[in-house]
Length: 300
Image (cartoon, rainbow, N blue to C red):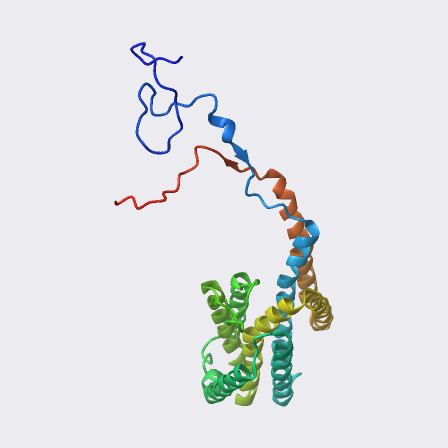
């Protein structure tokens, strides 16, 4: 039997989160049963390499979408795509996006479609009115500064983008987009304005701005609805999109193609492999020393 400092027998020690010092024992006393409740890696999630690779497809898909936007920007700046072709592309993308939403979103009703159509009509009208402002907005800034700032904004856009959700609130969703997603969207809009300000005519500015905002605003929403509807369709569309993007960037610039190819391989293969490997070194310990959670108001 354990004794206290005066040699008197003391009561058996009990583990208490609160209650003060037990008679006969110091405040930091532990006995041989203290570590019996220790648990290691209780909350560690076991990940599978194939599952990690499939989850990374959404990132590669959106990187490809942004690369396609950059390709369209480059062809427009080089006068290979005129404003009328851009307007036709805008109309086709808008019709395709609404068609996909009608098929894939279960809560996407006709009333919601009319609401979206009215919002887009007001949005397009405002964009057309502001096109002359965008056309002359950066006239006093050198082109080198414009290109550097545009690249920086696109990197911020890709870094802060919410790849698990949507840029705008999907139909039937309970939560709004995150703050980082809104910052990412704003960065893409500013980058679009910078590119549009280097185009020769106001109609060019309107067409490229409408195209860019359609992609940055509605492409994540469409991709989110497609993924919720069918993961196989999402997977097949992603492979086709990556292939088309690589083919277009190969014709545009070999360095751009090589950088994009390395980035996609790094995201889809190397990063998931690293994630699985570092799981071996994760060591989490839980036990009786963990912080207790109060079930009552301490102010009472």
